[in-house]
Amino acid sequence: MRRGGLLWRTYRPLLLVSIAALALVGVLVSRDYQHVYLDQVARDLVVRGQLYDELTAAREPNRVQALTQASGRATGTRYTLIATDGTVLADSDHDPASMENHRERPEVAAALAGRVGRALRDSVTLRQTMMYVAIPAPTRPGQMVVRAALPVRGIWQTISLVVSHFLWGAMAIAVLGGLATLLSLRGIRDVLDNLRAGANRFASGQLTERLAMPPVAELADLTAALNAMAAQLAERLASVVRGRNELEAVLESMAEGVVTLDNTAHITGINPAAAELFETQAEQAVGRLLLEVVRHRDVQRFAERALGTDSPIEGEIVWFAGEERYLQAHASRLRDHDGRQLGALLVLHDMTRLRRLEAVRREFVANVSHELRTPVASIKGSAETLLSGALDEPEAAQRFAEMIARHADRLGRIIEDLLSLSRLDQMGCTASMDLVDGELADVARAAAGVVADKAAEKGVSIAIDCADHLATRVNAPLLEQAVANLLDNAVTYSEPGQTVAVTIESDDAEIRLSVADAGCGIAAEHLPRLFERFYRVDKARSRKLGGTGLGLSIAKHIVGAHGGTITVESRVGQGSTFTIHLPRQEVRAVP
Image (cartoon, helix red, strand yellow):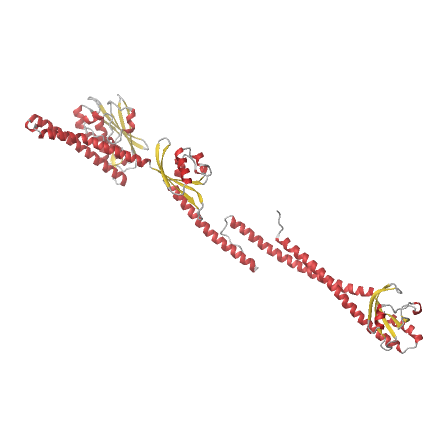
């Protein structure tokens, strides 16, 4: 519905009231002035009648008519002398003999009764409207009536002139007052327009500007209230924005997935962790049903439980997204400050890594127990055999003593390797490993020296191919141990007469140290787990050859502590190649 402006809605009734008031005042003034003026004319006619009576009282009757006519011409008044029986004795404007009896005339009847008579009517004799005033003749009481009259047309003209002057003056005042009111209302309208524009700016978020103070006290109070409201809104909005930014920062930095739902299971909010888990985008998920975004039966059931209860709930969800993942889910209802239910909050903790760590720990404990059980059982059996009488047989005692020593050495190697892994894990957690500039050729030669006796005993040769002065930042003893472990495995699984090749090469990004053998090789299904602790491709053969199952795991940890990786390529019957990838770093000249 269209609404009129303040100026028109205010000025129009004011103008109409002013016009109505002006018309009413004009009517009242005209009427009152008419009464006052007619009364004044009547009093004047009384005086004129008295003067006429005195003028004609002492005159002879035959001269009264002439004197009456002369008086009428001199004063512009019609005079009539009337006897008590109503006979006209003299008249200034007409022949008395031809005039009818005036006894029944109202003003004459009142005068004959001793009062001043007054009448306003058309004159039959003069054919115009006249105002008549009749009085008893003062000089001839009870004998005659003197009547004076004036034409009403002149009276109306005088009254009209006075009233018109008044009305024009009042109209001029009204016009000036209307213009002043119009200008004042326009000023108020302009101030209100400024207030409206300012309020619109405040509503659009522009809360830093302030409205100018108008000269009107009431509007100034309103402006001050709007400015104060803008300041309070700016402060509250800033607080809300800070809180929202903090909440968004917290949600975005959380590793847990967070999803908020309304009462109809539509997504109202989702953080990046949950969006990544559900393989979607936050802006695409918000506003859609959870069923449309996450097509997982357990998630749907958990959300339905959360929306159907007032108590917090929790559960476990197995999620398949390329790989098996375990989610610990928590949910609680969302309420506003009045306690009304707004929806539910879902928090999803990815417990996959913890579950895998628990599985690795269980497997590690089982592997350690299994690895330790065999040498311990052998040592115990040998000792019991010796105690049961084998000490008396030198050859048997020698054989069992050597068995005890051999398995004790194996226990020592296992414990030493476990301690090495523990130290490497600690270095990886604390980043406390010291790196110095060193040439990789020296590391490779030192590692080859460690396994030289074993290689010579088995008839396996080691060839090193490395460019001079190829250096990076390393922990030489640890990296030497990693390379020695790779060489030891290569020598162990090589046949006599074969060669183990050590090759070191580099490019702009990394340095690669490869250990290649021509042994039996490893089947493809074993390669992904090859660097796990205690993992063996051929358990019986590995134990027979004295391996602990920890060498490759130790090598992987050492290389990881250097910021590198280790890979393997192998084919059954063609041998294996283990490659250490180290990041290339700027070093000082190595002497």
